[in-house]
Length: 182
Image (cartoon, rainbow, N blue to C red; front, side, top):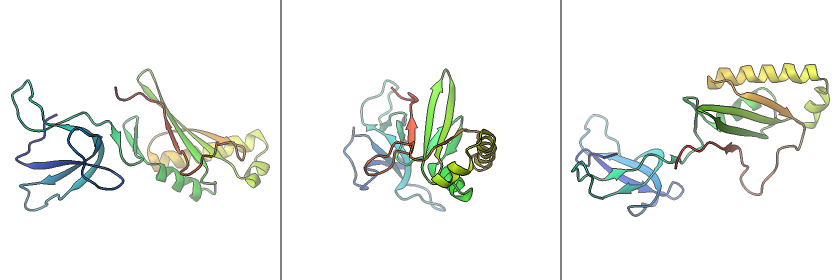
């Protein structure tokens, strides 16, 4: 993909530090508009992870080229065409009285994305919901709240306390098994 350098100045930065990276290095794409007057964009962070290269193209253009985006620098995922943020899921869980211990599992079977959310119950919730009927009722209620927030239906799993694996440092909230890029 070509970037019209007479209209936009493109840079690739380290998403964590903001440091400009050398050409050919993967990083977050940043645009500055060169000719917009009413609504200029100055170092607009797209959150897309790309590589910029200045190499001759078979079409004859000499502008810098951008590879197909390889992912995102934020936690946003696109599932079945819907933008999903883990923070939205956490908001629903806390609003509905659940612990923020959860894990999002995304995979692709054929051409269809699967979307599962594992939610760890607190000790108190687990004791209260021992009956299968209570668990099913809670699962359906939480699924409805998720659909309302996200606009997409996840498969909800309510799990016993301490059943989601803990990691040192930042918790692993998203497990995306889709092979979206080469």
